[in-house]
Image (tube, rainbow over all chains, first blue to last red; front, side):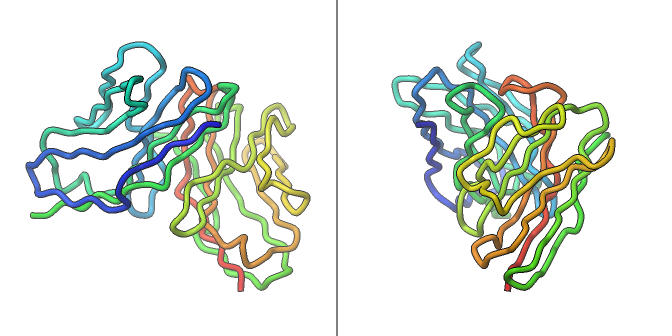
Length: 114
Length: 115
């Protein structure tokens, strides 16, 4: 069955520091993987997605994620955190049939410390 | 930039009452979805809708739930007789085409509180 696990419901980093948000997936088929971001009072916005092309995926706002099949991981990183990065981040995986369903993790709230 | 909108932003209702959550998808999109997130839990898929019919629904989407596209712009989720456990944030999404290759654009959500 398809699932994702996000480690840490809250992560705090200092402004300018590396951001690392962890996600591990379980999939019975080669997965499509996603990271979404939700800013306060806004909808979920796609940051980036992996669709079996390059394993290192670059997204918006300087974020990137690396697909590691051996570790079943898809961690999200950004070299230097900015105050505007404070938001909730959701890792997600496609449904088993690669249909429309997206299966989300619980989310990680990123706090940026000045 | 086109966006998905949802109304109301917050709905409070009594247990057993019917509620209708409204969504206006992006105008040229053909695929529509509802998800929900109970506080502190995962965002869960409820239903997908295409060509005026349900494409897929989850176990959560029981007979108390229904979806409709009553006109060319709105996409609604109706809960016929709300339960306490229906309290959640409900997200509408739309995409131009179906499948995971195509981005789903999400609305800001409606927070439903059932008392």
